[in-house]
Image (tube, rainbow, N blue to C red; front, top):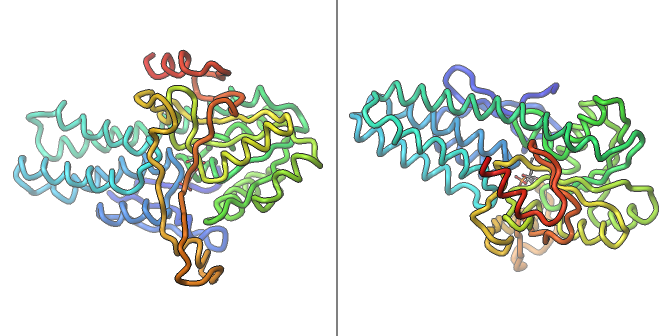
Length: 346
Ligand code: MRU
């Protein structure tokens, strides 16, 4: 991948500032927990796997900030850092999955010194980072089987290298198909209100030499009717055990359109995005964001400044609209529940 989403450098987390793309490629250094938490909140780093990784490195930073404290105070401050990072965004389960692994280290090191615990945090964050790189490539290979040479695909939001360590989930499937010698053309929904599709997916695909056209979200129906679209592929922020999928707002609408046009709708997500503790998507918490994102999107006033706004960041696509879920473990069609549970438990 030509651009790195996040990296650990000189005891700090360095993030590609995704709020500045595609205009500028700028990196920001986060050296304290509050800066990491705010970076997640403002979507400087975003996408389910990437925020899990950023939070894991955030815990290392929390440990560094408390390194000179007495052991009990060190542990209290690390717990407080984990709690702060957990309050950033509620929907993507990868955040909690990563933080739970970091928290568990405190119990597996009951008598270790502060530096040893900090080093164990860093080793775990590095492991999660490397695993994400490997998992996305395996997921990509699994999903690439569903594409043919010349496929045309619609995607929504950004589920690419920018949303993971470096390769992507939905876009990873497209990269893997390209690597297998199949040409794939992508229609990228622009993804109102924050334009992850036009700002990030289009930019990332162009960086990687993939044929991409941006469409406004309200053009998807017409493109599905007028073009030969082989499938839609999206990522996910959380998948309940029945296969209901939380992903960027607008995903549900695209899934309905795909069904209406007889086009397969695929969801690519790592096993860390599965939340089998939830029976259905109704239990997934949906983040609501600042009305300003809609009243003045990207700094341009687009609505009266006092108009009431509803701004959910995600929606739930019911499992009956999902043709298959692609993960690093394979590809599953309905009924989803038995296989999703097996994937998590093995
Ligand atoms: O609000 P965002 O930009 O974090 O939303 C991201 C998405 O909805 C992605 O599709 C999802 O996290 C999958 S990323 C591999």
